[in-house]
Image (cartoon, rainbow, N blue to C red):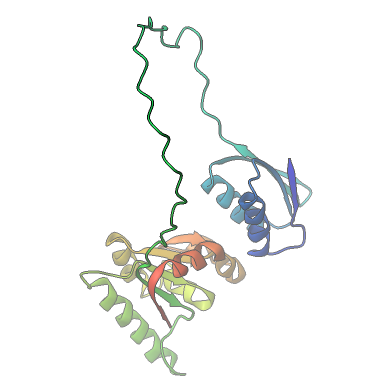
Length: 220
């Protein structure tokens, strides 16, 4: 079992360390962290990769034990009965094909991603900025082909709150198939996790992966 000691490491570093172990082929892991946010994000990463995760809390020292999910075994009574074999004429000898190394085909970038880092749009007039960002999201939600992803970080996460004037527009985008990714580190920092009314709480890795897979990125 591989042990990942991410004690004292905040997100996304704890997630990065776990991902590095997975990328090396780890099938069983024990991840040590010391804050709930890191534990939640690491657990989501592992479960998303097909692991069964057990979380233990020892006076603030959090341990996640993860192993690959296994398919249920088939009992002898459930196994299909062996089929009688019929002698077959020997197949003609055919020369084995010469192996050819596959040519990697890059995955095409898809759609547009929008990265929003603030709760207003434009200059220092907060009232005007709130009106503009609301109108901006409203216009996006009316497009025939809306953005593939809208990522909210820093104060941009406040646009997804229940009482935000922009929340309904984000919900409309969700209904059209847009992924609304809300930075988990940011909502934890502002203490507003329970007030998020649109999108999904996400990790920085998921946000970066979504931006990296987009054909175009618009940053506000």
